[in-house]
Length: 437
Image 1 (cartoon, rainbow, N blue to C red):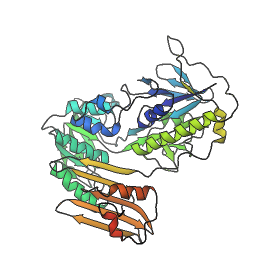
Image 2 (cartoon, rainbow, N blue to C red; image 1 turned 180 degrees about the vertical axis):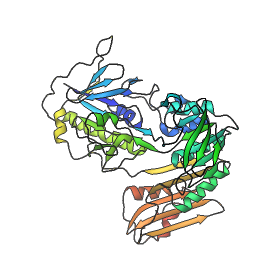
Image 3 (cartoon, rainbow, N blue to C red; image 1 turned 90 degrees about the vertical axis):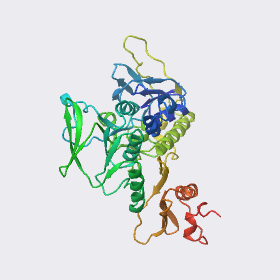
Image 4 (tube, rainbow, N blue to C red; image 1 turned 120 degrees about the vertical axis):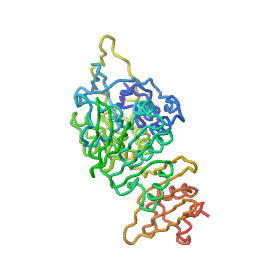
């Protein structure tokens, strides 16, 4: 008897697991799994939507299927269309939802929909709707100056919109960049024609006949707007897990086997919280999917009692669908090997267009603590900035703008948590080879 693996979520993590193992994948979006990192390129018209599709999974994906309830006792997933999908192992890869700020006038008619012209920037449908809306000369306001907001602002500017970027914090991309790097980034974004306002709180939206007309700021200033992009961050999508009684903190709590508080249910990607951390990035999602694939493959070769029979899956108006299977042994979940996922050191990279494109990379702790050593090089003429933070004999973080030649070697030293050689001056960390010669 073999194990039925059901994956809820067709994003980066879920699709990666489906490439590695035979699973039943339930994807809520109508589109085949795609690379969310490239949405800005679709918005800009550089890629057609089909170009960003992820490599094919080992089994067909059930698209447009929304999971609404987990019955842990029966080990079934109920879908919005009334169908039941049985599982021996369930993997939640439900991703995250965009944060919608508490703004006056955010909801449209009836209080359910966003006003016409107001868009999140999270899904392919968001991206396609924005592309249909934006015209040269359109007034666009982006709310949120993080990685997503900066990316959206520069793309809208490239499409000819008149863009205002508002950031409630003191600087752009404050989670990844230090003050000097953020100032250089701001200068570059403004050179693309984007008007940037930091320490700027948006208080509400104005609309007429269900269509946005302006953005109100807390200081009373009003920005005319035909397009508003909400880039205020994301929140793990955990409602399905919480309603099923699983342990949830910020995300769905998992151990090193990516296992939730139910030994038959795992979670990976943006919805998962491991070691007290929710990553919300593509790199960790891929690593978690790969680690879980190894865990489940190890289970399939372990010796364990047979699995009790499960209810058959049902589909309204038709026979029960068949499901791919891999191995057996769900009882092995009770005695999982200690190997698994131990965390990810994630590096952020972004390329901003313009007459002179700007590349940036950031990793780890970019703001030094007392006692840390800091090495910093700035070339104002070439708009290049490089900085690393060293704690003891370890590289703990860095940020590079304009010249990323050293980023590969630096990232490897940071990811591997390697001791830096005593004989190498710290300045060598910022040479083009990262001090490797």
